[in-house]
Image (cartoon, rainbow, N blue to C red; front, side):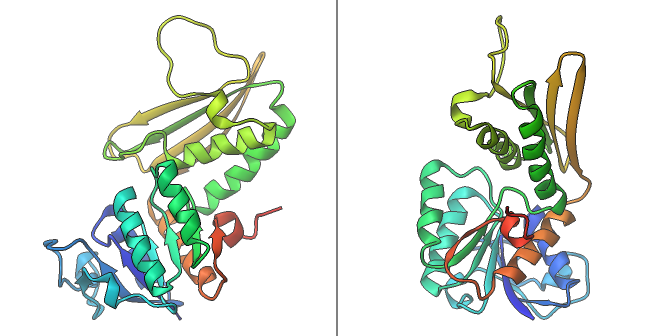
Length: 267
């Protein structure tokens, strides 16, 4: 059994993580955290997700919950995630981070923390998306010098960061394969008059309704298109991947890992 602590457990992803963990016989939820004075504090996590009571109650004090034998899973907001990471470092607790939208400075703090504790940090935890990253690299090797490359992503109207972390990871996969710096070739938005920049990687973003997550990478050649697409139909694919990451991470040495490590997809 892998003991896990779920941060931001009352949020959309937090509740999906609770359901995935309750249904996984290889993990044990030993803590479920919310912010101070949250209205759900003291609620049994089973009631929180419409399941039988579990005997674990929503709390707000990470400092008494974490230790090196418990894996913290954090899908929250960037500032809160960095605050949470400081508690994990103090407790020497492994961390799975699914938060997106970090600034470069915050990413540097994660890298520094990974010198002390093991961290899995990924933009997306689904098996499908992590397979897509590998397929995008292969397609770029074959078509990257011949095609115009565009990345499209769509999410629900409440998502705060844009483009999504997954879209950025797909862009990085293309740019790294081509030996480029994504920040130098990305076209984040288009308006007005002007032709497409040669070699650019274009990004398009949609925020609407309750879309869970859709990502497409288009390789446009003269007279034909090659499109690689992933559509998440429920958030459970992300939650289940994060649970697998937690099981994999326990006992690993300090370091910064991603889902490619967890799934054994690294070259």
